[in-house]
Length: 107
Image (tube, rainbow, N blue to C red; front, side, top):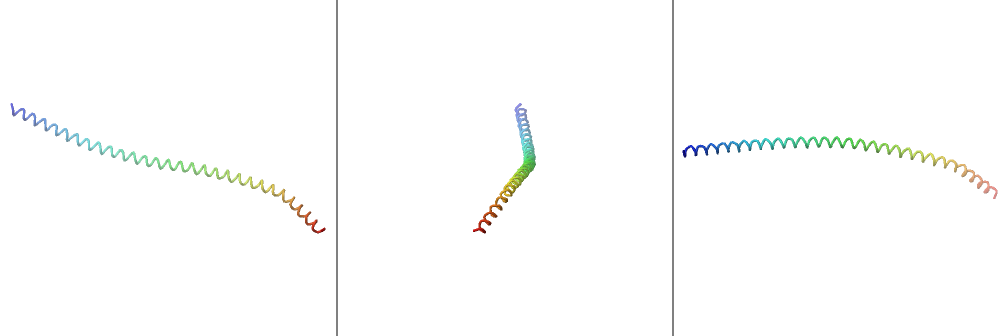
C-alpha cells in the first residue's frame, strides 16, 4: 500500500513537472509570437507614418505653390497699377519741367 501511494505521488509529481515544462514552452512560444507581432506592428506604423508624411508634404507644397502664385499675381497687379499711376504723373512732371525750363529761359 505504501508503495502504491509512493508510486502515485511520484507519478503525480512527474505529471506536474511535465505540465510545468509544457507551460514554460507555451510561454516561450507566446512571448516569441508577441514579439514578432510587435515587430510587425512597429514596421507597419513606420511605413504608415512615412506615407502620411509624404502625403502631408505634398499637400503643403501644393498649398505653398498656390499661395506663391496668388502673391505673384497680386504683386504683378500692384506693379501694373503703380506703372499706370506713374505714367499719369510722368506727363505732369514733363509739363512742369518744361514750364520751369521756359521760366528759366525767360529770366
